[in-house]
Image (tube, rainbow, N blue to C red; front, side, top):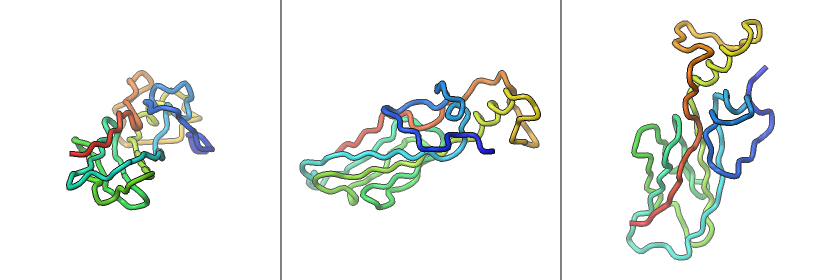
Length: 144
């Protein structure tokens, strides 16, 4: 069986998955989907509109109004979204893919018969600290 929530989890704020009380989230490895909207009363004239994702682990894919804005995996976690935004409401979707480190550590904390993963080289054990995971933010949109 897979680890992780079977149904979508709605978070009211950006949070580190590794700090969750829910072990299905704390030890999750995979993709999470973040959806939100933002308003632009007026498009800035001849200005760049930049989205900054703040902090996240480990890769991000961003779409604005249904159009691919780009992927990020190294700082600075910023994209130019000038050509994708419009006056009024804008739809923002961010996909975050984390590493499987926390999943390995979570499995190492289980009895051996319940473990689901295996790695030929595993530098982690049950006492290894969890790594920050997810979209931590703050996410900001600025016009320059």
